[in-house]
Length: 250
Image (cartoon, rainbow, N blue to C red; front, side):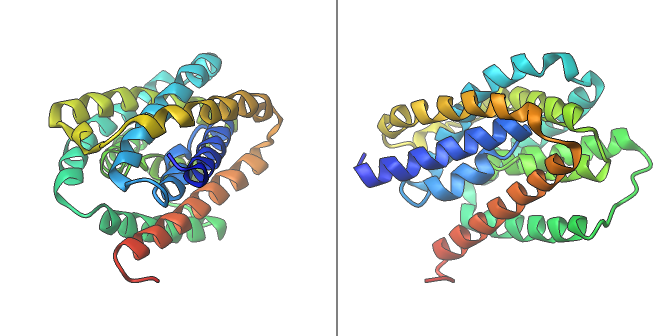
């Protein structure tokens, strides 16, 4: 791995792990577009999966006492269903095309939420199950699973502590399922070499260490703004990356 590529990859991984630890989401949204500029995209998707799993081991432990188990169970079940077609799509369709669609949808949602627009959901259980399916699908096909759930929970005005804990456990549990599904579908075959992955691990763990120490200082409103900013920046990076890979942007 060349020095410049290692530097870019390490910065991407550190930034992703730091903000994902603070907010409970956003790892793939931040890391994938940056890492894919120096590594093959499909390899990046696999690397991000394992790097995120490493981060979740620590954050699941620290947020255990704040978890709402019913919410985690319902959303996770939805994710499990969405993972299956998402993993299949990863093998047959263009990842940039999926990224283009997802980034545009996310930017639209962020704009509406920044304008205080809300959707009233009468049946929260059904809504959470449905958003889990959407999250699982895009998580398996693009490695970006967090934003749909984040925007949905923000729409519900879920308290910061509960939201962070719920997302940490939802994504932690579904990551294991995604890894197992990749194994079943032989998706790991897309990785030509695992050497870059080992170089990125130290930056990943440093981000987790610092993120845990900053998480407790966020207020509810600052947490909401941070969540929207992370989704917006990640969506913009994904949009630019997708347009470049589709040949629509120089």
